[in-house]
Image (cartoon, rainbow, N blue to C red):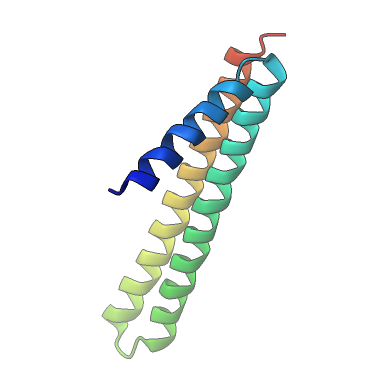
Length: 100
């Protein structure tokens, strides 16, 4: 890790701490990072889903077809559970940050 990376990490940490001083800043940070997490995991889930759908198209035996369909179902279940978990965590954090 170079010195510029350390300086940048300290700058970002200081910026986040300065934003989180006020209640609206804390709400904004929770919403932003929840949305960022949803976007990242959603993009990863879509890319993985396309790979598993491609495996269905490339299947030439019944066992390969069943394996590809099972992989598609697992990707859908894990992605749904992960994104729901992130959304639940964001709602919970909003309730902790701004208890109205």
